[in-house]
Image (cartoon, rainbow, N blue to C red; front, top):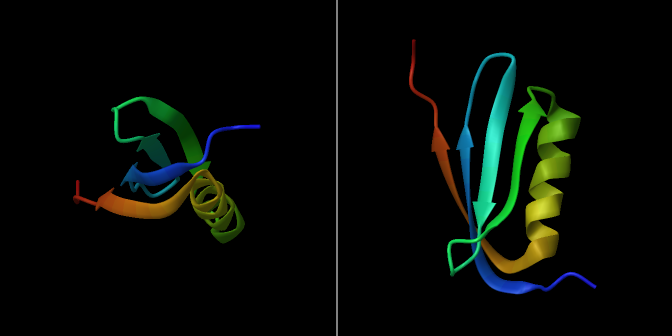
Length: 66
């Protein structure tokens, strides 16, 4: 069974066609790094995945304009 963490951090680079999400634990170890299609169902799935990995999830989103 995968280890459940107290807190993880997820950073997401938001784009028009897809996003990229990376989650790390308190030790800086990558828990997942994945492309997420810009689709509500896929975004919600990634949000659920993060929530299953930790009691607390802190989010950061990079959404700069080009």
